[in-house]
Length: 130
Image (cartoon, rainbow, N blue to C red; front, side, top):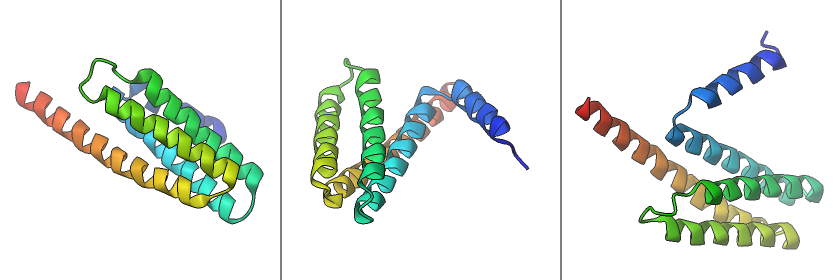
């Protein structure tokens, strides 16, 4: 049986050895998981849990903003998108509207898939160069 300490050590090692693309995808996984939890909590009228989960999604989105390469061609568009996500998450949290968070969830799922494809393309390019 795996103990909590063993699992934490495994996760710590995974994060420490991950590439930037893998870290980004892990963050998207977390944002998606917390967004789903927030949506479910709103539907169950568990507003304290919804607040916790949606706030966690906002914290992850803030991390996306902080780590965004401001010199990249898509930085400005991503920044606007992240700001919109936060607006919709706040709306979901304040108005107790799952629909607002569901919209964000859909975008997070699409963006995660896009980053997975970009990471694959990038690793294939490195393999060809090597």
